[in-house]
Image (cartoon, rainbow, N blue to C red; front, side, top):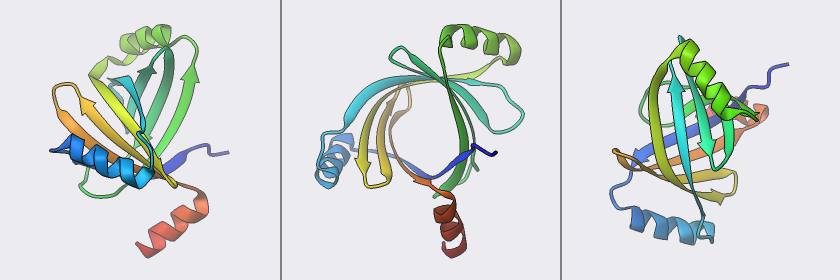
Length: 145
């Protein structure tokens, strides 16, 4: 059985994060939730593989999406792991590190849409919209958009 999840993502640079947060606060009727994340990316032949650390929790995420502008279909699998440090050591030995991304994320929920404002170390501020699709929604989206 295929356990692959799918979502549509849109990403863009944010030049004025305070203005963006104010607008999203109004639309979402919330202040959002803020937390830090560290993503360690590994060398793989297809897609992207990263181990995400958030507080003391680790999640291994494989995803595949095109490197194009505009909305993108992303297919992904997630696996929460109990020994994240051990897994990271093993993956580094086996695959090598492609890169590390450290960010402070503010998350808002608006209906089915996750709105992120990420302050990425060394790169600046970015917004991301993610809408998770169930199979029927995905079929509808791909047929009519």
